[in-house]
Amino acid sequence: MLLTAIPILDELLHAHVGALGRDFAGYRNHTYRVVNLCVVQSSSDPQQLEKLAIAAAFHDMGIWTAAPSTICRRPSDWRVPTSLERAGPSGQRKFLK
Image 1 (cartoon, rainbow, N blue to C red):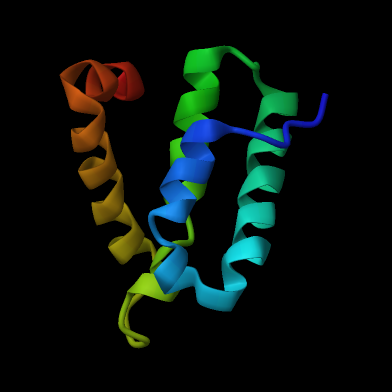
Image 2 (cartoon, helix red, strand yellow; image 1 turned 120 degrees about the vertical axis):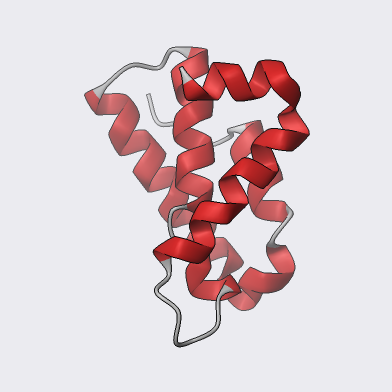
């Protein structure tokens, strides 16, 4: 089953629509392909899906949010804890398990 609507993924991506600009739709499509590929190879458990969605949202985000001379992975890394903080302690524990 192809996943086409993952609320947490869309919420995280929309929070960065300004940075993504005209690449928003393409990056959204890319993240959905990543999540769908992972789900096919693992499970569609709701907690696992949430983890995959968060990882997919930020895995290449640094390309749009970092200075051009910065390696893209590092700037993406700092955004994950920031998003998890918004989820609160239970969301953080759930993700880190």
